[in-house]
Image (tube, rainbow over all chains, first blue to last red; front, top):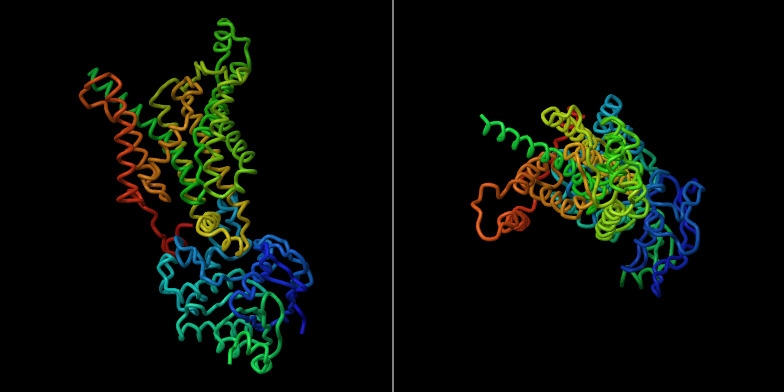
Length: 252
Length: 320
């Protein structure tokens, strides 16, 4: 199994706050890797470093053997790494279909002159919409395609965000609490969708989650982060059996 | 008979001015409504366009007059280019000035961008006032030729340009590029995380909008046939902001309605009121009326007369 994403000794401090403090991890191709830890452990900051929103103070982040630490978010996405956000950030004053159609890469119509290549733009829009419509159907968002995103429920917004990320055709998806705010039903749907994408499209996932049923069911291996550092790593059984993990996170 | 002629001429004047303001409004809508770039420097780009076109097209006769009056002589009057060159150059140069200003300014957060753009417009105003070799200074440039020397034909030209600008902006906003603009407006971080370069897309929206403000400037110069630095002051900018907000931000049709109401009112709003008090009282009322209207809209209908409407995907696929 090849490693597709790697972080080595990543540091990100904000003044005296050591958000990420020498964290390392490896994500193997076609795996769903979990990242858990108590609130404030540095998971989201680590995601922000990986996705280019922050530049790491020290350490290396690499994707497919190439250093990506310090690149801009759009450059990192173009390379095949897409992330979602903890609090679903729908582009509210845009419709559901506009949200998903924004995502595909290399659209001819995305330049001042390209927008006037009528035939090509129309063909691409049709192609992208075919894909997007199927995906929205899968995510049970098709009926709401012409709604503004701000009118969706919290769970629907999560589904929309994941759909949008998938439309970028990534090789690895970094999901920051993909089921936060989702109902039990939606949570199951999102879990099934993640596994299906892994199996059918060979997508790789790195998932931050607090819901234990999600983490323990679909993630392997699982990294545990505490105070910005590595606390433990292993399969679900090993992590659950780890005394330190129980103490700082799982409780009891 | 005479009354009919003067009425026609009055309608023509207002219609031409409204059409020119419509172009400014559409450009601002592109900047602020679709891309969230609060441009408070409209008057500056309007001036760049007006001066570019005037300097290029004004006849040598004007330079002679100035030299005779003791002015050493500069560039205006030496080129005598036709109108079409003037308007194209005005568009290009206003866009280029926008590009140069955009490099530092577009990296700013929106509130700082607003302040910086006012500063830029004031700088342009002072250049027009002081660089005599280029602009003649406070006296301004006169004898700017009107194409065909006919106000009716000229009005049709203005309408044609407005139609082109409307079509180009509407097409861009509907296109995938417009989607990126809207994404940038809604949430920069998300849009960047989807692989879109924020700086590049903002820069294009900025340059296109600035260029069209230059186009409007050129149309104004050839309509008024005389321009001076005193016209390109923040009041012009605020007037455009007001009618875009009243008409409906993010809606190009709303902008046209807003321009018709507000500019019509501003230009002629107190014409039919009986005069009372000192002679300056009644004209001053116009600004008060417009101010009250703006406050009322922001309080009771912030989305404007015609707000943005969502397009259904089925319609989009059909129209794109």
